[in-house]
Image (cartoon, rainbow, N blue to C red):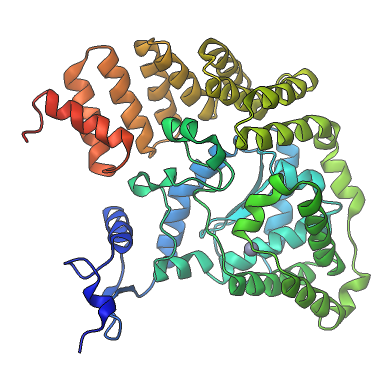
Length: 446
Ligand SMILES: [Zn+2]
């Protein structure tokens, strides 16, 4: 009577993928209703509560923002994005959610939402938008995902497994996968690793909701199509910069036609609504002044993804000549130097980045990594400790603290960190190293 599918499962009756998902979720206390589906025998997650959506957001969004080089230091632009977003959020189906909007320093083109309503847009896309109505369309679409609870839906289906818990965030995002060994050595959050990849149905629904929200907030719906036109143009001119956006928000001709249709029928009356072009241009004036810097970084990142580090360095140098205090530029350059094994240079760019944006963690991480490579373990340890103070919950930091302590010959303290690491992560090179040491030092009997 039993189907073949059930027999092919592990002795526990679940696949490894499901096991990883369950163990990471239950460890974090996320699992609400888990029951075996009577038809498939698979564990099925009945629901994710709103409180859990907010908790997951709080745990994960800070790591993603940090991986995207932190919120913009231009507070006036950030506040403008937040105001614009909250104005639209008031028109949604879940107006009570704790929404927050910001720009982030990353230069690739993307926008994303976490399930509790933390929403971000990169400098790459902010630079490309032509007016406030397009910003409203972008944020409206992200609000659509939050309101339709697409992340919770994916979690319930078990299709979203690359959350941070359990160190699974090292699953490479499309953007940084080309960094190969550097990314895995560093164990940093790959670009987009924490982001949900939506289905075509999700996208259609988010478009429909986003259009409705932006029109209710008083914007011209034509610009929803204007945004899509801009993105489609960009996918031809800058395919690398926009790759991650289309990987997480799949674009299709059908999606485009549906939006055009809705704008010309259902939302026809909004075509006389304003675009607020001047207001957008005023608030983004400072950003547009460094357009060449942003473009040089986009070039550099795309070359990094192809492992062309020497060529990438030329573009990062160009970016930093134009804008020497750009945090993202300094951090990217530090990574580029690490990739070329120029540890002293990597360290000095990371040190400079720390002074430019001391509240952001990534530069400390890179400085610590460069110091490990220079066998300056005591100083490396301080960097990782400081990173953890700024942003806790990244298991890789625990490993690197252990590794630094090992270098300092502080065996007991090192063993403690390795043990903590192995409780969270049980696969990969770092786990192997930690395990090996614990055996050698007699903490684990084999
Ligand atoms: Zn989307």
